[in-house]
Every structure is written in C-alpha cells, then in structure tokens.
Length: 98
Length: 293
Image 1 (cartoon, rainbow over the protein chains, first blue to last red):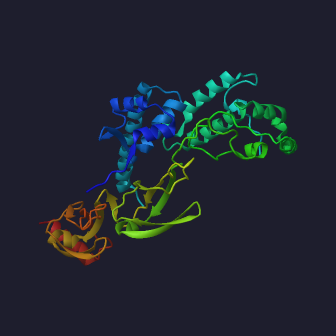
Image 2: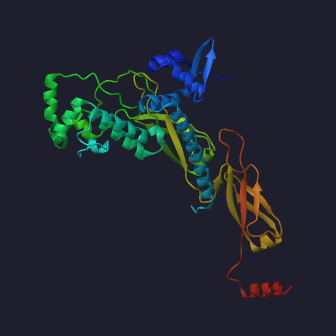
C-alpha cells in the first residue's frame, strides 16, 4: 500500500505566515489538492514544491490568483513543448551520422 | 573585479525614491524569476543581479555607502573598519526573493561582506535550491542497470541508473539539492542524461535501428547472415529477391524498457545490398549473359 506523507494545512500556514483562506482558494481553483481527514485539511508533501512556488508568485511577486492560474497553465505548456522537442530531437538523431 | 552599476541593473536613475526602487525590482523580478523562466540560465543570472541590486538600494544604509563609495569601492575596507567600531546591527530590511541565497558578486562581498543585509521580515521555512546536473552515458551504458558515484557539492552520492534511461530524461534525487532555509527541507538534485549516439545502432524510444549489408548473391538467391544485435549474435534468414532498403523487425531485440525488467523494444534491420565492383572479365561476361535473358 502506498503511504502518503501529509502536512496539516494549519501548520503549513503558521510556518509561512499566510492565511488558510489562501490555501482554500488555491484548492477551489484546482491549483492544489487537499486531503481531508477527521475534519482537518492536509497537504501531500509532493505538492510542497508547487505550493511554495505559488506562494512566491503571490506574496513576493504580487501576482494575483488569476495570474497564477495563467502562469501555471503556461508553465505546463512549456513542459509539454519541452517534452515534445526532446522527442523530436531524439527522432532526428536517427538521421544524424555519428 | 569590476564595479557594478546597481542603478543600471534596476533600470532606474540615481535619484530614484524607495518606491521607484521597489516597483522596478518587482517588475524585473516578475520578468526574470527562475520559476517563471524554467531552464533559462540567463534569467537566473539576471535575477541574481537584480536581487543584489535591490538588496543594496532598498537598504538606506547600504545605498548611502554604495552612493558614497560606489565607483571607488576599494575604499570599502576603511568603511568596514569604521562600521565595526560602531558595532552597528541592522535588524531590518526587505525580504529577498527565494531561490538565490548566497549568490552575491565579488563586488558585493567586497563592499558588504558577503551576506544579504538585514534579517527576513518573516522567518519562513523554505526548501533549499534545486540543483541540476548533466550526466553523459554511452548507449551501451544506458542499456544496463548500473551504479555510478557522483560528487555534488563535495558530497559523494551513489546512484543506480536503471536500464533504458532515455536521452534527455531527467531523474530526481530527493534531498540532495541545496540546504533548506530556516529549517526547511533540502532541495532536490535533478540529473539529466545525455546519451551519445552509437556508431552501429540508433535508438528511438525503445527500438534500435541498424543496417546489415547483403552481397548481390545473398539478395538475389537468399541465404543466411549473422547479425550483431546489441548483446548477442543472431542468425537471420534472407529471402530470395530481397530488395535494397528492405526492413526486418526482430521482436524483443531492442532496448530495455525503463524500469520494466525483462521487457525490450524491437530491433529494426535495414538491408543494404552491395553491388559488386571491380568485376573480372569473366564476371562481366556472365552478367552480360544474364542481362540478355
């Protein structure tokens, strides 16, 4: 069985000095997923990196939620395109003389 | 060590107000932040520069010192001595954006002692910086699961590279990036593999491609050839009348599937028919005879 490492949302918010309502709104927009256990909300540790990136966009770069959503979509597209470029480059190697 | 014009970096004039500096910094940080420019080293360098410029210009004391000594930064030592006598402590200041702690120019370190001035407004726990590295492998090395020892920031890490890793594929080694800040977790190490071309085999995903020469007689009359696959020799039957460029597929003789033990792609062989050259008179007459049929 796969075990999940969870962090209580309250604890995360305390550590980062942010409002829990911000995390709620991130969940509402689908940018992060929270796990509910016994009436408490938890974050999976594998989302930490993404969440810290979002916090940086919002609190340090002054980007609002709509902007963060757009950026996240564009970053996903960049990932997809980079994968596609890599696949095409690898295909091109078939025709290259070594 | 060259003088760095922090005003120029932030694209502001020397009379800029703290608000102008803040706005310029925010504008440029949004443009060059590494999270917004993945894999762009120029953006990372620019971001470090604007961070440094902001660190100096947004702190009144540092800005004063910079304005005073700026181009004559060599005198900063004298300033430092005077400063030590005063035993000043600066416990205020703007929070620097994350992702580049400790990355200051020699100029900055010479003038301000090497660390970001002022403490953070918030003692926030941050993950450490992620490190990126590139590892070169030959196709043969990528064919088999093997272990390699890497040295990252002076620390030796032994990693297992699973067979079937692809060119350009990146794997994550959790916790081997930069140290966490204020007790935050360490960053991760990302290793991207660069797999060199092999003179005999080409690879596309899990399939291998190679060529096999047939002489004219094998192509016309058929026969059997011995072919080197990636790890063993196999015997191949050649059908009579095989054309130049004919492709045959050897199932399961290709590259191992990544993290799928015992599963392999295919080997695709393209036949190249070699036309005989330097024919003897007798051979020429036999071909002429054949051509008349």
